[in-house]
Each structure stands twice: as C-alpha cells, then as structure tokens.
Length: 129
Picture 1 (tube, one colour):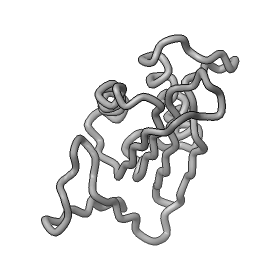
Picture 2: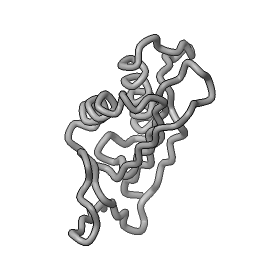
Picture 3: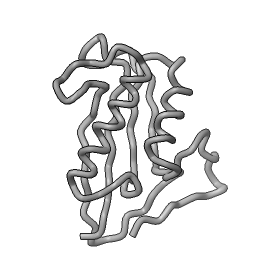
C-alpha cells in the first residue's frame, strides 16, 4: 500500500528520510495537525530535548488513536526555531520512527505561536481503507 520512491535523478536524502512515498488508491489518510512539546495538560516542556520528544509523542499518540502506528507515517513536517537543534531533531525523529523512513521536510523558522516553543511536528499517515 505504501511504496518508497527513490531516484538517482534527485539528491539523496541528507539523513534518514525517503525522497517520496506513494500511497495506493483506496487508502485512508490521516492529517495530524502540528503538535508541540507540551504535556497533556498543555504545559510546555522546559528543555529542547523534552519538547522534541513530546512533540513526536503527541503526533504518534494521535496516529495510534486512528488505529495506525509509526510505520503508517508517509510525510512529516517539522519546524524548529534553532538550527543548532537539527542533530537533536534527527536523533529523536529516528528514535520515534524506529527505522521507518517517511518523506520529510525540516524548516528552521523565526518563531512559533508561543515564544517558548522550539519545535512543532505535523504528519500525514496512510493505511488500508
């Protein structure tokens, strides 16, 4: 149902993500809104590592609530406010996705909705209908 697309006619990924993922027709899609590094009560975590981990945990909790898991993620968009956290982002993403490679976009942005926020993660997942 999900097929990784890779071509030598475009640059190879710079880290552990796929160039593209094809989703066959008849699949159901899940679009997860941007998740931040906050706990269930809305408290924003104090450290960058905690924020990155919570943002991914929150996104994955929503994926699981839809009856899917990390292997159903076909695309991830991650926004960080500090380019020095690129390595941290990659480490935690790889941990959370357990070797699964989705298509991905990473953007370093000037800020997020709350100045305390350092990361936001949104994903698209697909599963058989």
